[in-house]
Length: 404
Length: 137
Image 1 (cartoon, each protein chain N blue to C red):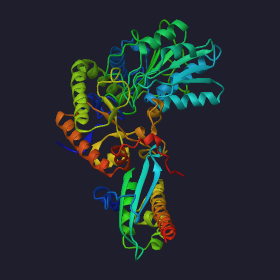
Image 2 (cartoon, rainbow over the protein chains, first blue to last red):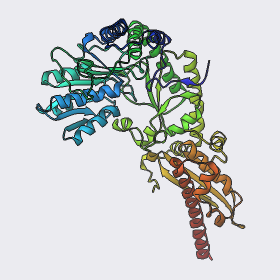
Image 3 (cartoon, rainbow over the protein chains, first blue to last red):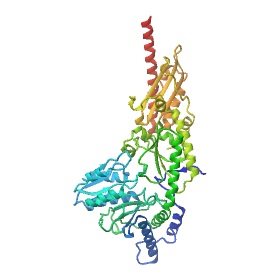
């Protein structure tokens, strides 16, 4: 077994060697511009792009013509939200999103607020899911777009996307979802899920970075977008710029592999994830799960180890790559806004670790990580004044802390 | 973020972890920070009443590696100092010794605050003791 062990697959995934092999010829031999219509170099590139478009569309139950290539999910989120807001500005100026969205969505919405749009940020329940009744109540005649992520990047919970889409459809409001954490991991179908726009990226599903797509529905309803970049009018005029052919080939191949292997891969990842959780809970007391267990990605686990601060925990497992919701691991000194949105105390947010298990992790690695974490948490609890106080029966919530 | 070797050393081998009986007359306890901020430091000194020298120091820490190192270092420095000398320890001394980056300076501030709080607690106990002895006399 080699260290360091990578268990941060929500941040990014290693590229599958099969994806790389598919991409390589398009850097050198087949370097053509997919928009060159009058020679073979261009035709070969265009064929490769068309194949990838179909592979991506097949994975999400879409038509290839509904796939718009972008540089990644941040661009896709920006294009979807700003593009709809601008296109449908005459209809209304209200957008609905949720407090636990990715910054690519939240900060895009904040930008639109500055431009005069009104944005509703729905709170989430303790399990991380939005309340469908609150969504219904939030929709007004001025609402043009609801944007709610498919699955959350920090806690892995899956939103009731099909129901959200149904509500939007009934009210005549467009529905965008940031699908990056869910696509390729769980079955996603734009028709069953009533999705009008969906952001996709390559590097979360064992494909390349810098290659993404936006699904844009063409029929019932036909979604229109105002392009956010001006240029040659590529991608049905929605996204100008010469296509990143090798990246697109990689994204397509990555989608095809996910579609083929999802049933087996899901079982394997879920087994490893469940084993990690049960080992940690058997070895330690006061381990808390963050987010719904039932509505969750198969490879995702977010746990808080009470009385232990997250960064010090990461330091103790420095040959394991995971993330913490603790303030100390970020530049802001604020603990994760996603965990806070669940209503968790800041102390529990500071104690959280996110595990993202991936295609290339082994059972041996999971055992190693569990054993090492148990040792380090025990050691840090011996060091923790909070653990000592809790053992003495002191209610920590009733202590008045000296803090200036 | 890369940690300095001294921070890593204190994190891996923290000095003087533990607790004294906080009701003892020659023990001063300082507890600073709050769980919501991700930092709680408990620092205790045990003072030799006759000489006024800190004969032992212990800590417990809920916080990041730099905060653990700051409190561990503080206990090392406290031992053998008089209470007055201990008050001279500045957070900047800790920053320099551990090469803490700007984002971790608050860890050293916490250690200085904990030292001061522990000494204040000790002195309050001493004053009360003298007062109660005088009352008895």
